[in-house]
Length: 225
Length: 224
Image (cartoon, rainbow over all chains, first blue to last red; front, top):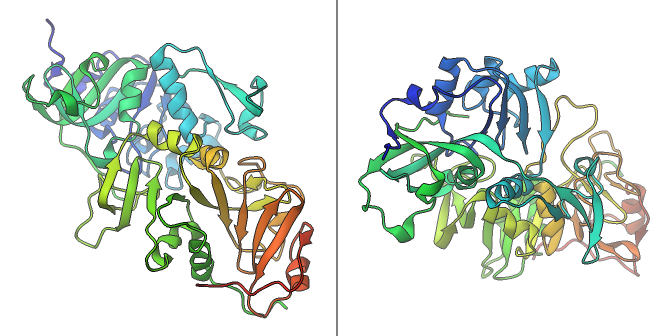
């Protein structure tokens, strides 16, 4: 059986083509796959569609990829006040944005993961995000049709992996990571520690190995601000 | 009238804190709502929810004790109370959207006579704005309180007949707490429950962009 454990960060992203659709975990400075993002910057991929809650913080997180103009389209709930590189690219029309309510971002990814072809939601009815979406009344409530959100890759950060790819997360560094892990064709995880198979308590596994395709050990990077 | 004292942001937070029932699960949004945790009345226990996956969020971490894997929705390192739980973002918003939270308190740019809320982008400002979790919360909280100043910096009412800013949700607000008043959104329209000390119902009305019902003498805003 081919091992999922990689020894180098750059090998993890070697096959990521230009134009790929990539999910990036992380929220509030916690749980960002920053080593993998830096590897994508070194590789120099272009025209990426990024799916992430926000658009980075100055030169950190996805900010680095916006700085190098690698992202063409972004699907996010909250670009963020410190996403200066995104804001500049957006103002220059070098990047397009789809704003999605945060919980709906999660559920659209879960729909993709779960083999569901969409769902009706009351979130955002009567607002800008309902524009162009099918609307109907269900159970007496106005709802809009939301479509699944799949991706080619999910780039995630976890605390521990076993050699098979079972994952655990630490505190609020969990955030979007387990959801994205399930929703992409190929899930790539950087983790603080890799342990032998059998050493994680099966009841404590947060992302089962079936969703994880590549793992690499890397000390997490936290950007201030 | 402009010179009369109004509630400070802290006083707005302190008044809104009185709306939280003992034992409630509560989400606090950015801005004034974020101050509410400091003003809970003695003997009241509230379980704070954070959209990044916390129930039982405690105070901010003390300097030197920050753990950057444990942050609130504003990226601030926080603590956990005893009996807290951690979960992923989808479950966090399942709680907001699915009607599991007892109360949510959000900031606002505009609230309409029908309780429509606008709180994520001001037209004419730079950039695309950001929705975050506000639309999920507005759609699903059992009770939604909005804390904001009664008028903008240039004196324009923020309580309006119809919102002109991009909407967050329709008919979602139950109560508005401002630096001048506590107002309930009722099927009959906006109803003035309390007014700031020294302010008459008529004076509050003049700074409100939608009709404001008041029955008899309107009591002063209470802080206990």
